[in-house]
Image 1 (cartoon, protein in one colour):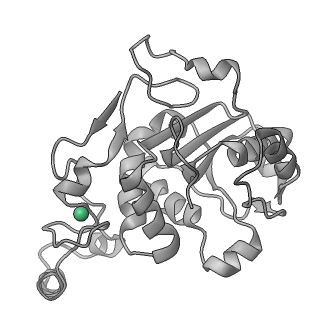
Image 2 (spheres, protein in one colour):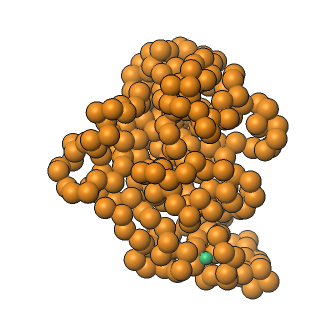
Length: 274
Ligand SMILES: [Zn+2]
């Protein structure tokens, strides 16, 4: 079942900046910092991360934008994390698994990939809008616990170095870094490299995509993977081909389990993200 968020901002309190915890609340430095924040908020009020409408809270969305967000709630497929039409218990499975079984153990996503989540992903990927990764990670932290609770570490989906040079940063690293303190699982950023640029997948059949992804990843330190429970972090799960290929590589290196935690996943016939 898909639900729109019922209230303008149902999120938990924003995660405080690490520096604020080091200053006693009543000290003159803390008072000075609060006054400075109040002044900055007055001069530059927080804005909705999608439509830029002024808001009371930073790192959030306005009511109309929230109402368009399709948060994934149970019942879901225990393996793929996709919404199910009716509740068949905690181990319910999507019929799609019969013809399309993933190579990872379980995936969880915060939202359905739709117009609103697509705009948020775009802000994260191309605009580098501050606060977007924090908001997405807060939403993810409530949906991905079933895969992160038992995990040893998070592995952001690597970008090929050519893509990294074009874009300057890997959005999956931003998400993993923001998610890590919320779920209490460390991030391993340089454990896996993408050695083939496999992003030109649009228009290829599933078979062609699988071929294209063969040997796409290289693990820097296989000893660090053997026997460990790994969670791949990414912004969007589209066809699942990249997650499958990375899961295959991690398993070949001896990973005990491979989970997937994403912000949004494509459900049904939604077109590929740009
Ligand atoms: Zn808005």
